[in-house]
Length: 301
Length: 156
Image (cartoon, rainbow over all chains, first blue to last red; front, side, top):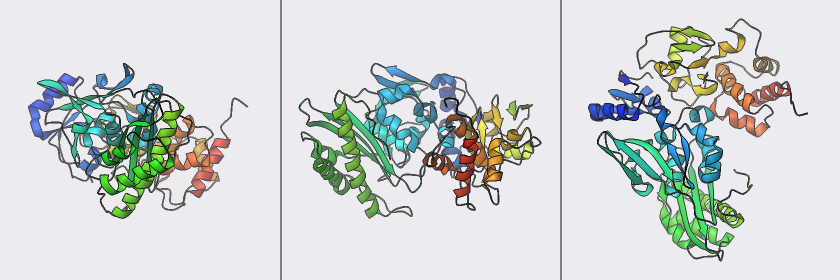
């Protein structure tokens, strides 16, 4: 239960970090909040030769308004996002999901970029990022590029980031008027890995019909799953309890092929997909009807 | 250089030394307990710059330049009178074997700072990152309520 030896670097700037990653190639691993990497190292499931600790790179820790959207530095602590008024206003879906991420002790260290780059299929942030059409800014010693959420998550613990590339920022676009969002998950105990979770975004037409919906599910596959079949059920329809139910059933039967493990059977997870999707959509529709993306005073849980 | 419970320490350690092991083995502060070593049990919780963190999920070198508070820091290095939260745990029988207690105390100190008068649901949520296999949590919740009752409410 102790990590194997490694060489340790704690650069103070992004450029220094990128130079170290370029120099050490696939021997090196960036260390963000460490709340997934350090347990894996304690178990010796991960044995990086070189750790590039990003915790001294102060320039990667920020939450900024970006037009009417948001830009968040990769090393921003999850706790800072949870406590941010700006996040609560500009990305209420993200704000609503934060308390479901593990425990406060983990969120005090865990970072936004670390969780996204780790790409655990049962993590909340990848699903939220996918639902919000987040863009990922990746830098390397030779340049930088933007990766859309739909291309960022590649599979189990796998992203589009290349060796030597570092996730430095995410950009969350503003939601259109008459949008509503909701996040829900089911876990055995508060803070445990979710058996299933759902992040829903809906946008209504001026006439009240559903113009577009993005529903992203977690803990049901190799990564966050976009429920595109459920979205087709919703498009152009008037919001109702019946519509939300139909979309939930479609998500459960067509969008997911969930795993069975010691925590839940595939059949139970499928049932949870139907129920949680229905509830999240009902809540998101209600919020969309209340006003342009504004969060209603709906109790969570 | 790290400040622990107000005292400054300077040590040269291997990068792979966990903060939990540094506190126990280098500084002799064995009040910080080591349970699962993968961030689940919460026994090793300490304060880093005033916020609760898992000391088994940090390297000691990462605490360089920061302030750490361990359970010993609640009683002025172990010799002072009990912290009001500790007194409430004593009074309400909020522990049995006591293995989980230091981590629970260090979780609850910042929790009560931010939520001086929590309801039961908030208390149980705050405790969800700390495992106790003796008490069934009942008396821990009672202890938190007792401690909370002792915190003055300025608005009333």
